[in-house]
Length: 164
Image (cartoon, rainbow, N blue to C red; front, side, top):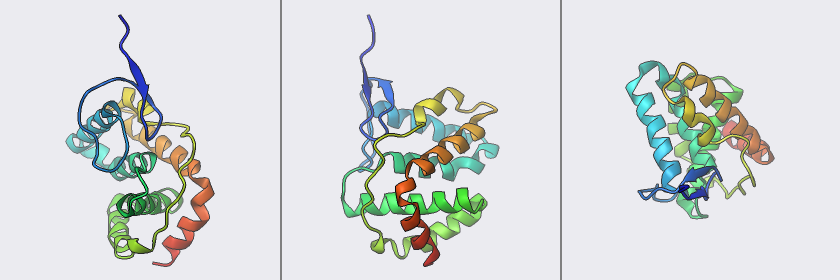
């Protein structure tokens, strides 16, 4: 008997159906949320993997934008802003966290951004490599593809970032 599979409502990755929790406002399937939890656990348990931790969080967040609530709008905008500085400015993780704290002071100015229809790479593509020697490389690839998937909002995010 084959296990039932379904697409995650956020990133559209296909996973075997799983019962379990999801995030409070990021729309995901329980299986997708579970894989993200495994990725986070590997990063928290391995100091070297913490270098890509913020990329992981930001990438997952913008692939699961949730509803159009103010909280979800701000989440997407803030995570896209930090992705921008990590990818385009190659800021180290500690600095990007400090930048994010500054961004959060003006998150009320963020507007709704229509998400891409599809994502070139998802957590499902990273999952087989969680905790391996190519974990960080796969997360960086996932983050870069995801940033590019949001290209129709790059100008807005770059302008918003520059206003800090």
